[in-house]
Each structure stands twice: as C-alpha cells, then as structure tokens.
Image 1 (cartoon, rainbow, N blue to C red):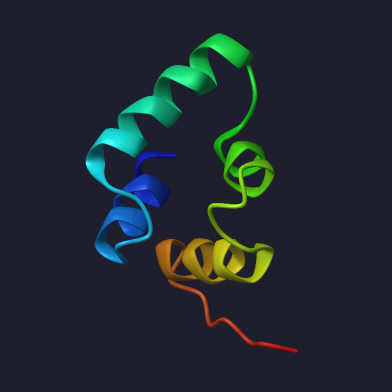
Image 2 (tube, rainbow, N blue to C red):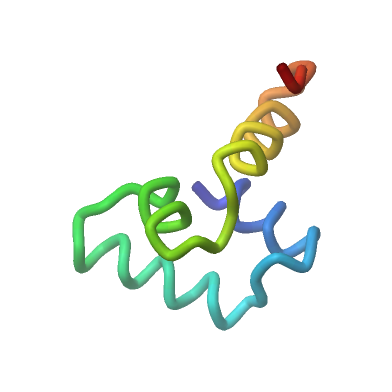
Length: 63
C-alpha cells in the first residue's frame, strides 16, 4: 500500500495530505487502497496497473 501511495506522490497524482487522508479512510472504512482510488476517480485502472507493474518490477503492456 505504501509503495502505491509513494508512487502516486512521485507522479504528482496526489499530495502527502491526500495520502494521509486515504490511509485514515482505509482504516475506518475497511476498504482497500485500490478500491478507494478508483471510487474517488483519483486514477484510472490503467494507471493503477501501471503503478503495480512498476512496483513489482514487471513489464506493463498496454493492450
């Protein structure tokens, strides 16, 4: 989870304040980070997959 938040900050998609808010919401809602990001339209599924691929050091192929 923290790696995803770090990458979102690095890509200037969210700021540190928003990352902290998301962490609180994860704890209070019981939802996963990915679910919140998509629900709030902060990123697209494609961006999420791209970030996860980078974190896992896997190639990301846009199909």
